[in-house]
Picture 1 (cartoon, rainbow, N blue to C red):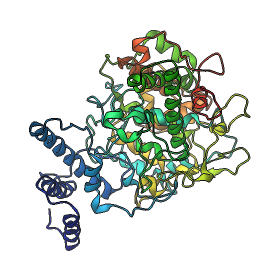
Picture 2 (cartoon, rainbow, N blue to C red; picture 1 turned 90 degrees about the vertical axis):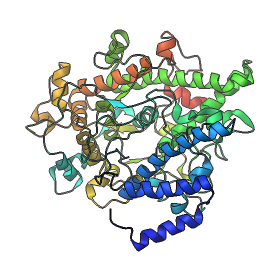
Picture 3 (cartoon, one colour; picture 1 turned 45 degrees about the vertical axis):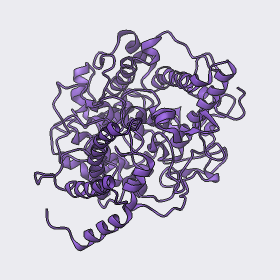
Picture 4 (cartoon, helix red, strand yellow; picture 1 turned 180 degrees about the horizontal axis):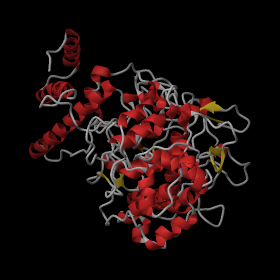
Length: 565
């Protein structure tokens, strides 16, 4: 590497003045500087091959790799400290003071940000050195169809998909005809929360490096780790000191607690990305607290309340995924087949669950095609764009509170807004993503979610949609149905969207997308020894339900102030 410039020397001098200079932190300081330098060029002079988060801008990617290496040094140092300091904890994450120290060089002014303010993306996106996402067990992505070859062709061609002059920009054009789906508008956002629960992706953002087997920074279980993180012992900031069995909420109970800069103090910072993800997160926190009330009334011992409430909430959530969410998305027949026969293509052994790349980087990104450009938040209200108006990463504004009856069909309320039909197009809000989500990028394609999804599949070497269809025994889509005739095949993500349009009526996934999603979610539950499908497959929900079958709307109602205990 070339010698540091004068500006780099000045930045390092600032860090030296701000960081404490006791022995251990002094060594860490130099370690940070060295790692940040090596992030651009590895020790052998070549670009560092380790995958970084696609949501981060290049400068933030450099910080991420440096902090990732530093985390290993911190953990190694903790082991040696423990030998001479009996009782010293082996925290699985840096303490708040360590995180503050490492962030000193780029700390922002201590002014709370409103929900929707323009905060740099790299200050909020998931990072391996931060509180969310470190798996409780080894986790790697894998392949669902390892026998299939990656889609041939030039991967860099997808970079033009977000540019207006390229034919690929058709992905980003809204359909002028009616585009209401059968299901309510909130379901793709619940699907996003489920995705956050099982994945924290570390696949490369482009095709410059060999993906191999990238790490999943989240344990692949539907266990609500995004809420509970490390529990009251490892993540005490999540819980209420006045009632330690309950989650701490914001001052009015409708937002999450935040630090003085407006950063959400939650188990997974990605759930603060927009109003809908945040509102679902708060609803689950409130549901846990109401379950604690019910268990306490039933005489459960105080020492057992947190664990009992977690199991209760998690099992009801898992039931919802299997019996409410999946049937709407892939159809009841496919769900029943996988439950009875097991997965034909994905059936990991108990305790060895993993997330296939075909799921994470293609099929489960179906939800991007269901998101509308704008939404009403309250009855009779004006529709506002999802991005940038409802972007998060700051305290929730009083005029941005959500009535869930606008997103889900609640009993006794008018029908909610509908999700967008799956038709191979993305809403306008997803064409030009705001800087708070993408970071500071120059190329137009980096702001288009369509291009980012295509790029993701190319960089991880996914097979074509046609190849997967033939393997599953499903008739591949025709060139007319796909709207093109690519000689090498169709990117799997785009194929899943088009298949949903022509084989699922725009309301649900087709044979390829549906099989991948159903087998993976049910397979992960069966691979988790603590899930209800593993421990008690015949278990039934026991919380109050408005209808004959327990549903997500029942869980949302549980945390509503109007509901009794």
